Length: 426
Image 1 (cartoon, rainbow, N blue to C red):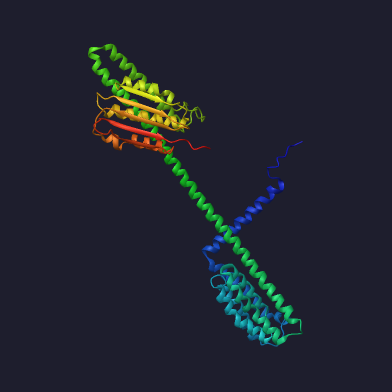
Image 2: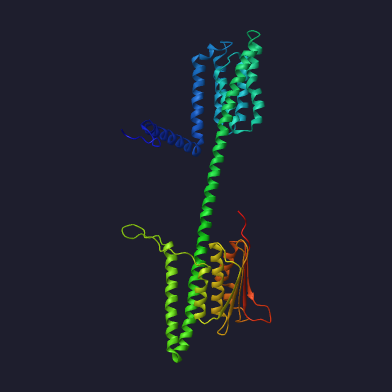
Protein backbone atom coordinates (compact mmCIF):
# COMPACT_ATOMS: atom_id res chain seq x y z
CA UNK A 1 0.00 0.00 0.00
CA UNK A 2 1.46 3.32 -1.05
CA UNK A 3 2.07 5.90 1.63
CA UNK A 4 0.49 9.28 0.95
CA UNK A 5 2.04 12.32 2.56
CA UNK A 6 -0.77 14.69 3.63
CA UNK A 7 1.62 17.64 3.31
CA UNK A 8 2.06 16.97 -0.41
CA UNK A 9 -0.57 18.28 -2.87
CA UNK A 10 -2.93 15.68 -4.24
CA UNK A 11 -3.91 15.16 -7.89
CA UNK A 12 -6.81 17.63 -7.57
CA UNK A 13 -4.50 20.29 -6.11
CA UNK A 14 -1.91 19.77 -8.83
CA UNK A 15 -4.61 20.02 -11.47
CA UNK A 16 -6.13 23.17 -10.00
CA UNK A 17 -2.88 25.00 -9.29
CA UNK A 18 -1.94 25.79 -12.92
CA UNK A 19 -5.42 27.25 -13.56
CA UNK A 20 -5.13 29.46 -10.47
CA UNK A 21 -1.70 30.62 -11.51
CA UNK A 22 -2.95 31.28 -15.03
CA UNK A 23 -5.85 33.40 -13.76
CA UNK A 24 -3.55 35.34 -11.45
CA UNK A 25 -1.08 35.91 -14.24
CA UNK A 26 -3.78 37.18 -16.58
CA UNK A 27 -5.14 39.41 -13.82
CA UNK A 28 -1.69 40.89 -13.22
CA UNK A 29 -1.21 41.53 -16.92
CA UNK A 30 -4.58 43.25 -17.21
CA UNK A 31 -3.82 45.43 -14.19
CA UNK A 32 -0.38 46.30 -15.49
CA UNK A 33 -1.85 47.23 -18.87
CA UNK A 34 -4.53 49.30 -17.17
CA UNK A 35 -1.91 51.17 -15.11
CA UNK A 36 0.13 51.93 -18.21
CA UNK A 37 -2.82 52.88 -20.48
CA UNK A 38 -5.89 53.65 -18.33
CA UNK A 39 -7.63 55.53 -21.17
CA UNK A 40 -7.80 52.39 -23.31
CA UNK A 41 -9.75 50.47 -20.69
CA UNK A 42 -11.99 53.46 -19.97
CA UNK A 43 -12.83 53.84 -23.66
CA UNK A 44 -13.55 50.12 -24.08
CA UNK A 45 -15.87 49.90 -21.08
CA UNK A 46 -17.62 53.17 -21.90
CA UNK A 47 -18.04 52.07 -25.51
CA UNK A 48 -19.65 48.82 -24.36
CA UNK A 49 -22.25 50.61 -22.22
CA UNK A 50 -22.89 53.29 -24.86
CA UNK A 51 -23.52 50.56 -27.40
CA UNK A 52 -25.88 48.76 -25.00
CA UNK A 53 -27.77 52.00 -24.35
CA UNK A 54 -28.08 52.75 -28.06
CA UNK A 55 -29.36 49.25 -28.80
CA UNK A 56 -31.98 49.66 -26.09
CA UNK A 57 -32.92 53.10 -27.47
CA UNK A 58 -33.05 52.26 -31.17
CA UNK A 59 -34.44 48.76 -30.79
CA UNK A 60 -37.43 49.92 -28.77
CA UNK A 61 -36.66 47.79 -25.74
CA UNK A 62 -37.07 50.81 -23.53
CA UNK A 63 -40.82 50.82 -24.23
CA UNK A 64 -41.25 47.61 -22.20
CA UNK A 65 -40.65 49.53 -18.94
CA UNK A 66 -41.55 53.06 -20.05
CA UNK A 67 -44.36 54.97 -18.38
CA UNK A 68 -44.98 56.80 -21.70
CA UNK A 69 -44.05 54.73 -24.78
CA UNK A 70 -44.71 57.71 -27.07
CA UNK A 71 -41.60 59.66 -26.08
CA UNK A 72 -39.87 60.93 -29.28
CA UNK A 73 -37.08 58.68 -30.53
CA UNK A 74 -34.65 61.58 -30.85
CA UNK A 75 -35.09 62.46 -27.17
CA UNK A 76 -34.61 58.83 -26.15
CA UNK A 77 -31.40 58.65 -28.19
CA UNK A 78 -30.06 61.89 -26.70
CA UNK A 79 -30.91 60.81 -23.15
CA UNK A 80 -29.25 57.42 -23.71
CA UNK A 81 -26.02 59.09 -24.81
CA UNK A 82 -26.18 61.57 -21.91
CA UNK A 83 -26.55 58.72 -19.41
CA UNK A 84 -23.76 56.52 -20.81
CA UNK A 85 -21.02 58.77 -22.21
CA UNK A 86 -20.06 60.31 -18.80
CA UNK A 87 -18.87 56.83 -17.76
CA UNK A 88 -15.65 57.71 -19.56
CA UNK A 89 -14.71 59.82 -16.49
CA UNK A 90 -15.97 57.35 -13.89
CA UNK A 91 -12.46 56.83 -12.42
CA UNK A 92 -10.91 60.27 -12.78
CA UNK A 93 -13.99 62.39 -11.86
CA UNK A 94 -16.79 60.09 -10.63
CA UNK A 95 -18.66 62.82 -8.75
CA UNK A 96 -18.67 65.16 -11.76
CA UNK A 97 -19.75 62.30 -14.03
CA UNK A 98 -22.68 61.48 -11.72
CA UNK A 99 -23.79 65.11 -11.64
CA UNK A 100 -23.52 65.23 -15.45
CA UNK A 101 -26.00 62.34 -15.73
CA UNK A 102 -28.50 63.95 -13.32
CA UNK A 103 -30.28 66.20 -15.89
CA UNK A 104 -30.69 63.29 -18.29
CA UNK A 105 -31.99 61.02 -15.51
CA UNK A 106 -34.50 63.67 -14.40
CA UNK A 107 -35.62 64.23 -18.00
CA UNK A 108 -36.00 60.48 -18.52
CA UNK A 109 -38.19 60.22 -15.42
CA UNK A 110 -40.27 63.32 -16.20
CA UNK A 111 -40.88 62.33 -19.83
CA UNK A 112 -41.92 58.82 -18.83
CA UNK A 113 -39.20 57.08 -20.85
CA UNK A 114 -37.63 55.73 -17.62
CA UNK A 115 -34.62 54.48 -19.58
CA UNK A 116 -32.72 51.54 -18.16
CA UNK A 117 -29.52 53.42 -19.02
CA UNK A 118 -30.18 55.38 -15.80
CA UNK A 119 -29.03 52.28 -13.92
CA UNK A 120 -25.52 53.16 -15.07
CA UNK A 121 -25.55 55.73 -12.28
CA UNK A 122 -25.01 52.80 -9.90
CA UNK A 123 -21.65 52.19 -11.55
CA UNK A 124 -20.73 55.79 -10.76
CA UNK A 125 -21.94 55.28 -7.17
CA UNK A 126 -19.57 52.32 -6.94
CA UNK A 127 -16.61 54.43 -8.07
CA UNK A 128 -17.49 57.26 -5.70
CA UNK A 129 -17.50 54.81 -2.78
CA UNK A 130 -14.27 53.34 -4.09
CA UNK A 131 -12.31 56.54 -4.66
CA UNK A 132 -13.79 59.46 -2.72
CA UNK A 133 -14.39 60.09 0.99
CA UNK A 134 -17.41 58.18 2.25
CA UNK A 135 -19.14 61.37 3.38
CA UNK A 136 -19.98 61.95 -0.33
CA UNK A 137 -22.46 59.07 -0.18
CA UNK A 138 -25.06 61.31 1.49
CA UNK A 139 -25.54 63.62 -1.46
CA UNK A 140 -25.01 60.71 -3.86
CA UNK A 141 -28.12 59.03 -2.42
CA UNK A 142 -30.10 62.23 -2.97
CA UNK A 143 -28.89 62.59 -6.56
CA UNK A 144 -29.64 58.99 -7.54
CA UNK A 145 -33.03 58.80 -5.82
CA UNK A 146 -34.24 62.15 -7.21
CA UNK A 147 -35.27 60.69 -10.63
CA UNK A 148 -37.15 57.88 -8.86
CA UNK A 149 -39.02 60.44 -6.77
CA UNK A 150 -39.96 62.30 -9.97
CA UNK A 151 -41.25 59.11 -11.57
CA UNK A 152 -43.31 58.13 -8.56
CA UNK A 153 -44.69 61.65 -8.17
CA UNK A 154 -45.67 61.94 -11.83
CA UNK A 155 -46.68 58.38 -12.69
CA UNK A 156 -47.36 56.74 -9.30
CA UNK A 157 -49.70 53.72 -9.56
CA UNK A 158 -50.94 53.59 -5.99
CA UNK A 159 -50.03 54.10 -2.36
CA UNK A 160 -47.41 51.34 -2.45
CA UNK A 161 -45.38 52.89 -5.27
CA UNK A 162 -43.28 55.06 -2.98
CA UNK A 163 -42.26 52.16 -0.74
CA UNK A 164 -41.63 49.72 -3.57
CA UNK A 165 -39.68 51.94 -5.96
CA UNK A 166 -37.75 53.96 -3.41
CA UNK A 167 -36.96 50.82 -1.42
CA UNK A 168 -35.63 49.04 -4.53
CA UNK A 169 -33.59 52.09 -5.52
CA UNK A 170 -32.09 52.52 -2.06
CA UNK A 171 -31.25 48.82 -1.92
CA UNK A 172 -29.47 49.06 -5.29
CA UNK A 173 -27.53 52.11 -4.15
CA UNK A 174 -26.55 50.34 -0.93
CA UNK A 175 -25.29 47.25 -2.81
CA UNK A 176 -23.24 49.37 -5.26
CA UNK A 177 -21.75 51.44 -2.42
CA UNK A 178 -21.04 48.34 -0.32
CA UNK A 179 -19.16 46.70 -3.18
CA UNK A 180 -17.12 49.85 -3.62
CA UNK A 181 -16.32 50.09 0.09
CA UNK A 182 -15.37 46.39 0.19
CA UNK A 183 -13.05 46.69 -2.80
CA UNK A 184 -11.58 49.86 -1.31
CA UNK A 185 -10.94 48.20 2.05
CA UNK A 186 -9.34 45.23 0.33
CA UNK A 187 -7.16 47.49 -1.78
CA UNK A 188 -6.09 49.56 1.22
CA UNK A 189 -5.33 46.40 3.20
CA UNK A 190 -3.23 45.07 0.34
CA UNK A 191 -1.39 48.39 0.10
CA UNK A 192 -0.67 48.28 3.84
CA UNK A 193 0.65 44.72 3.55
CA UNK A 194 2.83 45.64 0.59
CA UNK A 195 4.18 48.68 2.41
CA UNK A 196 4.88 46.56 5.48
CA UNK A 197 6.62 43.95 3.34
CA UNK A 198 8.78 46.66 1.74
CA UNK A 199 9.68 48.10 5.13
CA UNK A 200 10.47 44.66 6.51
CA UNK A 201 12.64 43.92 3.49
CA UNK A 202 14.44 47.25 3.93
CA UNK A 203 14.89 46.57 7.64
CA UNK A 204 16.18 43.08 6.90
CA UNK A 205 18.71 44.46 4.40
CA UNK A 206 19.80 47.05 6.95
CA UNK A 207 20.20 44.36 9.60
CA UNK A 208 22.27 42.28 7.20
CA UNK A 209 24.50 45.26 6.45
CA UNK A 210 24.84 46.09 10.15
CA UNK A 211 25.63 42.45 10.95
CA UNK A 212 28.23 42.38 8.18
CA UNK A 213 29.78 45.63 9.44
CA UNK A 214 29.83 44.30 13.02
CA UNK A 215 31.44 41.06 11.82
CA UNK A 216 34.08 42.96 9.86
CA UNK A 217 34.83 45.06 12.94
CA UNK A 218 35.09 41.91 15.09
CA UNK A 219 37.43 40.25 12.60
CA UNK A 220 39.54 43.42 12.43
CA UNK A 221 39.81 43.47 16.22
CA UNK A 222 40.80 39.80 16.39
CA UNK A 223 43.41 40.10 13.63
CA UNK A 224 44.82 43.25 15.20
CA UNK A 225 45.07 41.60 18.60
CA UNK A 226 46.59 38.40 17.24
CA UNK A 227 49.05 39.88 14.77
CA UNK A 228 49.91 43.06 16.69
CA UNK A 229 50.68 41.34 19.96
CA UNK A 230 52.67 38.46 18.54
CA UNK A 231 54.68 40.68 16.22
CA UNK A 232 55.51 42.96 19.14
CA UNK A 233 56.69 39.97 21.14
CA UNK A 234 58.74 38.70 18.20
CA UNK A 235 60.28 42.14 17.74
CA UNK A 236 61.28 42.30 21.39
CA UNK A 237 62.75 38.81 21.28
CA UNK A 238 64.63 39.57 18.08
CA UNK A 239 66.13 42.75 19.56
CA UNK A 240 67.15 40.90 22.72
CA UNK A 241 68.63 38.04 20.72
CA UNK A 242 70.63 40.42 18.58
CA UNK A 243 72.28 42.01 21.63
CA UNK A 244 72.85 38.64 23.29
CA UNK A 245 74.33 36.94 20.22
CA UNK A 246 77.79 38.42 20.69
CA UNK A 247 78.09 37.75 24.45
CA UNK A 248 75.79 34.81 25.18
CA UNK A 249 75.02 32.47 22.27
CA UNK A 250 72.86 30.35 24.57
CA UNK A 251 70.61 33.32 25.34
CA UNK A 252 70.42 34.11 21.61
CA UNK A 253 69.38 30.53 20.88
CA UNK A 254 66.68 30.77 23.54
CA UNK A 255 65.44 33.98 21.96
CA UNK A 256 65.28 32.27 18.56
CA UNK A 257 63.36 29.36 20.06
CA UNK A 258 60.91 31.79 21.64
CA UNK A 259 60.55 33.60 18.30
CA UNK A 260 59.82 30.30 16.58
CA UNK A 261 57.22 29.33 19.20
CA UNK A 262 55.52 32.72 19.11
CA UNK A 263 55.45 32.73 15.30
CA UNK A 264 53.85 29.29 15.15
CA UNK A 265 51.30 30.33 17.74
CA UNK A 266 50.43 33.47 15.76
CA UNK A 267 50.17 31.52 12.52
CA UNK A 268 47.93 28.94 14.18
CA UNK A 269 45.56 31.56 15.56
CA UNK A 270 45.49 33.41 12.25
CA UNK A 271 44.86 30.18 10.33
CA UNK A 272 41.92 29.29 12.58
CA UNK A 273 40.42 32.74 12.04
CA UNK A 274 40.83 32.53 8.26
CA UNK A 275 39.45 28.98 8.13
CA UNK A 276 36.20 30.23 9.64
CA UNK A 277 35.97 32.91 6.93
CA UNK A 278 36.98 30.70 4.00
CA UNK A 279 34.14 29.76 1.68
CA UNK A 280 35.88 27.71 -0.99
CA UNK A 281 35.31 23.98 -1.56
CA UNK A 282 37.83 21.21 -1.85
CA UNK A 283 37.87 17.53 -2.73
CA UNK A 284 35.20 17.63 -5.40
CA UNK A 285 32.96 20.20 -3.79
CA UNK A 286 32.98 19.06 -0.14
CA UNK A 287 33.86 21.92 2.15
CA UNK A 288 36.57 21.10 4.66
CA UNK A 289 35.74 21.75 8.29
CA UNK A 290 37.67 24.68 9.76
CA UNK A 291 40.17 24.04 12.49
CA UNK A 292 38.36 25.20 15.59
CA UNK A 293 39.80 26.22 18.94
CA UNK A 294 38.36 28.05 21.93
CA UNK A 295 38.97 31.77 22.28
CA UNK A 296 41.64 32.69 24.82
CA UNK A 297 40.46 33.03 28.41
CA UNK A 298 41.95 34.24 31.66
CA UNK A 299 43.38 30.76 32.22
CA UNK A 300 45.74 31.59 29.30
CA UNK A 301 46.89 34.82 30.98
CA UNK A 302 50.06 33.25 32.43
CA UNK A 303 51.10 32.08 28.97
CA UNK A 304 50.52 35.60 27.63
CA UNK A 305 52.57 37.19 30.42
CA UNK A 306 55.39 34.68 29.96
CA UNK A 307 55.66 35.64 26.30
CA UNK A 308 55.76 39.33 27.17
CA UNK A 309 58.45 38.71 29.78
CA UNK A 310 60.52 36.72 27.29
CA UNK A 311 60.30 39.70 24.95
CA UNK A 312 62.05 41.81 27.63
CA UNK A 313 59.22 43.55 29.47
CA UNK A 314 59.05 42.84 33.23
CA UNK A 315 55.42 42.41 34.31
CA UNK A 316 54.08 42.19 37.86
CA UNK A 317 50.56 40.92 38.46
CA UNK A 318 48.13 41.26 41.34
CA UNK A 319 44.84 39.32 41.34
CA UNK A 320 42.12 39.65 43.98
CA UNK A 321 38.75 37.96 44.17
CA UNK A 322 37.39 34.79 42.60
CA UNK A 323 37.66 34.59 38.78
CA UNK A 324 34.08 33.59 37.91
CA UNK A 325 33.60 35.51 34.67
CA UNK A 326 31.62 34.28 31.64
CA UNK A 327 33.61 33.46 28.51
CA UNK A 328 32.76 36.72 26.75
CA UNK A 329 33.94 38.87 29.64
CA UNK A 330 37.07 36.77 30.03
CA UNK A 331 37.91 37.37 26.37
CA UNK A 332 37.38 41.13 26.78
CA UNK A 333 39.67 41.32 29.82
CA UNK A 334 42.28 39.12 28.12
CA UNK A 335 42.31 41.23 24.96
CA UNK A 336 42.55 44.50 26.90
CA UNK A 337 45.56 43.17 28.86
CA UNK A 338 47.09 41.89 25.64
CA UNK A 339 46.65 45.20 23.83
CA UNK A 340 47.88 47.29 26.76
CA UNK A 341 51.06 45.20 27.11
CA UNK A 342 51.57 45.21 23.35
CA UNK A 343 51.49 49.01 23.33
CA UNK A 344 53.95 49.03 26.22
CA UNK A 345 56.30 46.76 24.30
CA UNK A 346 56.11 48.95 21.22
CA UNK A 347 56.15 52.45 22.72
CA UNK A 348 57.29 52.49 26.37
CA UNK A 349 61.01 52.23 25.72
CA UNK A 350 63.71 49.72 26.73
CA UNK A 351 63.76 50.35 30.50
CA UNK A 352 60.02 50.20 31.15
CA UNK A 353 58.16 47.70 33.27
CA UNK A 354 54.44 47.01 33.62
CA UNK A 355 51.96 46.17 36.34
CA UNK A 356 48.65 44.33 35.93
CA UNK A 357 46.13 44.70 38.78
CA UNK A 358 43.02 42.55 38.35
CA UNK A 359 40.13 42.60 40.83
CA UNK A 360 37.04 40.37 40.50
CA UNK A 361 33.71 41.43 41.96
CA UNK A 362 30.27 39.87 42.26
CA UNK A 363 28.20 38.60 39.32
CA UNK A 364 30.83 39.17 36.65
CA UNK A 365 32.05 42.59 37.77
CA UNK A 366 35.75 43.15 37.20
CA UNK A 367 38.22 46.03 37.46
CA UNK A 368 41.52 46.00 35.59
CA UNK A 369 44.39 48.49 35.79
CA UNK A 370 47.45 48.14 33.54
CA UNK A 371 50.26 50.66 34.08
CA UNK A 372 53.78 51.02 32.75
CA UNK A 373 56.76 53.21 33.59
CA UNK A 374 57.67 54.15 30.05
CA UNK A 375 57.45 57.40 28.17
CA UNK A 376 55.45 60.24 29.58
CA UNK A 377 54.63 61.75 26.17
CA UNK A 378 52.02 59.55 24.46
CA UNK A 379 52.77 58.27 20.99
CA UNK A 380 50.21 58.45 18.15
CA UNK A 381 49.57 54.74 18.48
CA UNK A 382 48.58 55.22 22.10
CA UNK A 383 45.97 57.84 21.29
CA UNK A 384 44.57 57.09 17.85
CA UNK A 385 45.36 53.50 16.91
CA UNK A 386 42.97 50.69 16.13
CA UNK A 387 43.92 48.90 19.33
CA UNK A 388 42.42 51.53 21.61
CA UNK A 389 39.25 51.61 19.51
CA UNK A 390 39.00 47.84 19.69
CA UNK A 391 39.39 47.87 23.47
CA UNK A 392 36.60 50.42 23.82
CA UNK A 393 34.31 48.48 21.48
CA UNK A 394 34.84 45.30 23.46
CA UNK A 395 34.18 47.14 26.72
CA UNK A 396 30.99 48.75 25.38
CA UNK A 397 29.52 45.31 24.65
CA UNK A 398 29.11 44.78 28.40
CA UNK A 399 28.24 48.35 29.38
CA UNK A 400 31.69 48.94 30.85
CA UNK A 401 34.06 51.88 30.82
CA UNK A 402 37.64 52.12 29.61
CA UNK A 403 40.05 54.96 30.26
CA UNK A 404 43.50 55.17 28.70
CA UNK A 405 46.00 57.99 29.13
CA UNK A 406 49.24 59.16 30.77
CA UNK A 407 49.65 58.51 34.45
CA UNK A 408 49.18 61.62 36.64
CA UNK A 409 52.35 63.54 37.57
CA UNK A 410 54.86 62.99 39.02
CA UNK A 411 54.57 59.38 37.80
CA UNK A 412 55.76 58.49 34.31
CA UNK A 413 54.19 56.10 31.85
CA UNK A 414 50.78 55.05 30.67
CA UNK A 415 47.65 53.75 32.41
CA UNK A 416 44.72 51.70 31.13
CA UNK A 417 41.70 51.34 33.42
CA UNK A 418 38.87 48.93 32.60
CA UNK A 419 35.69 48.39 34.61
CA UNK A 420 32.90 45.96 33.73
CA UNK A 421 29.78 46.29 35.88
CA UNK A 422 27.80 43.43 37.40
CA UNK A 423 25.70 41.34 35.08
CA UNK A 424 21.99 42.11 35.11
CA UNK A 425 19.98 39.35 36.81
CA UNK A 426 17.96 37.26 34.36
